[in-house]
Image (cartoon, rainbow, N blue to C red):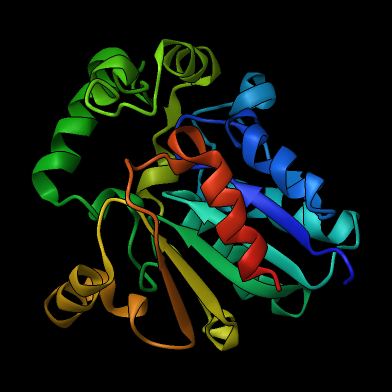
Length: 246
C-alpha cells in the first residue's frame, strides 16, 4: 500500500508542535506528514502582525501544497483550522483527496470563526482583545482550568500547551470565509469529540452554521474526549486519520 500524504493544520493559539504525537504515529504507519505552523503561530510567532487574517493562513496552506507539489493530500483541520483547510481546498481542490475535520466543520460562505459562538461570546472576546491583547490579539485560554476534568491530560501536557501557545491574531477570527463551492465535491471525514453524530444532525436542522456538516459526502467517527484530541488521545486520533486515508 502506497503511503498517504497528510497535512495537519492546528486551531487557535497553537502551532505544528501540538500535532507531534499524531504525526509520529502516522509516520510509523509509513505515511508522509506535514504539520503546519501558520503565520504568527508556533515557530512563526514572530511573523504575527495586526494584519494577519484568515486569508494569510489560507495562503500559508496553499503555498505549502504548491511549493512542495503535494497531491492526493488528506487535509486535516482542527477547530479554527477547518476554516483554513476548507478555504485552501476550495482554491486547489485538485491537490486534495479528502478533508478531515477534527471536532469542527466547514462554515458557510460569508461567516467567520467569531460568529460561531454567538454575539455575546464574540463581544466578550473583543473586550479581551482590547484589554489584554493590545487591540489585535486574543490571548490563549487557561489551559490548566480547561484540562482539569480531563484525566488523559496530565501536568506535562498542560505545560506543553502553555509553552506552545501564542496569542491569536484577532482578524483570523473576524474575516469571513470566501468560498466558491469547489471544495464541496471532496469527500469528508468528521472526527467528533465533544459532540456526537446525533447532535450534529439535530443542530444542522436548526442552526445554519452547521448546514455543511450534513451536506455532501460525509463519514463520521466518534472519538469522545475533550476538544483537543491530539493532546488527550493522540494514538486513537492517529488510527482514525490512518483509516481515513485508506
